[in-house]
Structure formats: C-alpha cells, structure tokens
Length: 468
Image 1 (cartoon, rainbow, N blue to C red):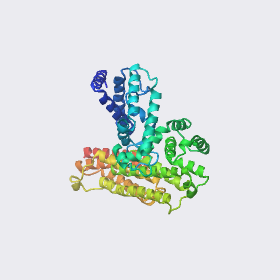
Image 2: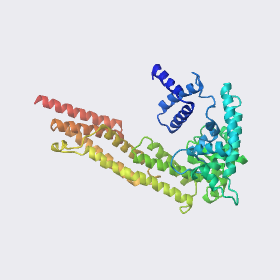
Image 3: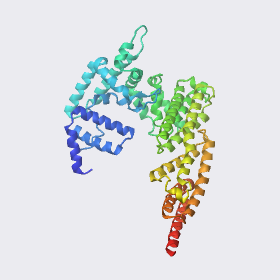
Image 4: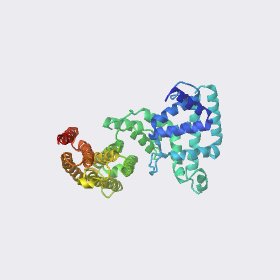
C-alpha cells in the first residue's frame, strides 16, 4: 500500500467513534486468530492501534486499556473455541463472553465493574500503564466470585430463572468454567511459565516435570484440571500424547486403572479432539479443500495409533467404542472420495475418435489441478491407510491410477503424431494433463521424459506435414 493510501486509511479510522474502533479491532484480531486474510488484517490492525493509541510507534507490546472486557477475559484466551462442534472439558465458548460481561455490569458485580472502568479511565488519562495489572486482577477476582456464586447449585433453591437472565443454556454451561479460570489465573500462569514453549516428544523427564508443576491444590479440582491439561496440550507437538500423563499417574496402561484416577479426563479430552479433527477432515473433503488434508491425516493416524498402542483399551468399553467410531468416521469420509478419483481421471484422459472430439467436454486447467490434488490426496492416504482402516481401497485405487495413467499417457503421446488439427490440439491438452498426473504418481523424472516425448511427437508431425 502506498503512503498516500495508508494515510487515507488512517484518517478514515480516526473518524470512527471509539466504540466502532474497539469493535473493529476485536473483529480483526479474531480474523487473525482464525487465519483469515492475515496480511490485510495485520496491516489494518496496526494502523488502527496507532490511531487509538495516538502514536506512530509499535505499541503492540503495551497493555490494552481501552477494552475492559478484553482485560477481564485475558486468562480465558487459551481455552476459547468458536466452532459449532460440542465443547469438551477445558474449553469455553467465545460466544458466552459477551452475555456474561453484560450480566456482570447489570446484576452480577455492577459496583466492581464501574470501579474498574473508572480506574481504566484514570490510567488512560495518565498515559501510563501503572496500576493496570492491580485493577484488572481485582476485578477478575470480583467477577469470579459473582459468577461462581450464581452458577453453584444450592439445595432447595430454583435458580433457573436467574440463570436464564444471563443467557441461553450454552452460556450457563460455561459459567463455572469462566469463574474457575478467572479465580485460578495465577496458578495457570505459573504452570505455563514452568513448561517449555513446545515439547516435540512428551518424554519421561518432561512428564515428571509437568506432573510436578501440576501438583497444586487449586489445579487438582475436577473443574480446573481439564484446563490445566488443555494448557499442557497446547505445548505438545502431538496433543494426543497427553494420555502419557494419565498413564504415568495411574502407574498402568490399563484403561480401568487410568479411568479411576482424576487424570482419566486426559483420555476423554484426547478422544474428543480426535473426533473434532475427523469432523474437520470430513468437512474439508466435502468442500474439496485438500490443502491441509496431509497434516490432518498424519495427526489422526498418529493419534489413533498412539491410543491403540499406549493404552490397553477394551473393544466394549466407552473409550474403546469411541475410538472405533472415530476410525469408522475417518474411513467413511475417505473411502467414497478415494473411490471417485479414477472416474474423474478417466473422464479427462479417455481416448476419443477424431469425430467425437468436437462434442467432448472442454479440459480446463483448474479442473486438471483439482484432479491432481485428488491424486495427491490418494497418495497421502496410502501413507496412513493401515491405521485409518482404508488400506484395501487405497492400495487398489492407487495401483489402478498408476496403470491407467501410464497406459493413457503413452497412448496420448502416440496419438499426437496423427489426426486433424482440432483433434491434435485436444489430445495435446489431454497429454499435458496426463503428464501432470504422472508427476504425482511416478515422479518428476518420468513426467519430464513423457513431456519430451510429447514435444517430439508434435514436432515430428509438424515436420512431416511441411514435407508433404
């Protein structure tokens, strides 16, 4: 963007009301978290921050003092989810935050909320962040007590009407989690500070270290332990390995003994996340989005194999049935897509008589690339086929593709030596598509060889035509 355009954008943002600026800032931050239009969002967000904070310096590291809700909910950020998939223990719906914030200001802790906003106004006027941390923590504790008080069931009291004033059932379900995380902020932050940024392999030494860091009474409650485990999982290169902590605590890989400990929830969390990943894979396949399929398949393969090999699961147990259902879902999602690939390849490469080529469907480059992505998808599936229960269909389909593409490419190259001009042009497009498929199935060297053969066939035909 040119300087003139940048200044024009900044002038526009400066004219917006403060509430609109704060709303726009939150929306761009959420877009970045979702991975949508990151470059544009980052640029606009940078300019918006400069406008809001009134400086040309990079203030991204400075604490935000213009959004009290953001400051209150800071400790919840690692646990927020936005998908329509059911939440698990250790997760909080982002959509629940606004209704709870409105309730705190209206009924839950109105005096504390007003005092917090007054303190923020004074901090903004001072131009310094001194006192921000103390004011924020004071309000977080007040909010936590109000939330936990209203959300804790009391014998003999009907609280349904009161809870309904806060929000719908999904919001009510998140209340205790929100209050618990706000109250345990220091313990969770201490746990995070005692772990490495990333644990590529959750080894015995790291398991012992993490277990020691978890040995805090406030994190051992049924309410907070799932959040502590979720925090640990975010540092794991392979999140399913959290089950190793449960196995360590149970001193056994027997699922009954693991389930009998509080850390059995780690297995439930790992299974839930695998199920969520399987659902994402199914959605991406239906939408023909194959960019992340390789990573998804690897994560599913490693997770399923890890649970099957490191835990002694019974087929008729709840965990065993859930893992079986996940494998079946993955298999069903993949199998129909795998089986459709050979038909799409044949549609492009099928040999046609010269008289039929005029009525043949056009070969579009985007369609060729889409089919190439599908072939690559089958190749990736072959790598993880055995653990995902798609071994037979994947190996058969891949073998069929190799044989058909190899024969078709050779035939198409030979066909380039004859036929009328229109037929030869169509077959040349077919040959280019076949060579693209060869590159995936047989490698770059073979594809280059067939490409040179196709060029020689066309050149030879042209020379023969001129000579005649």
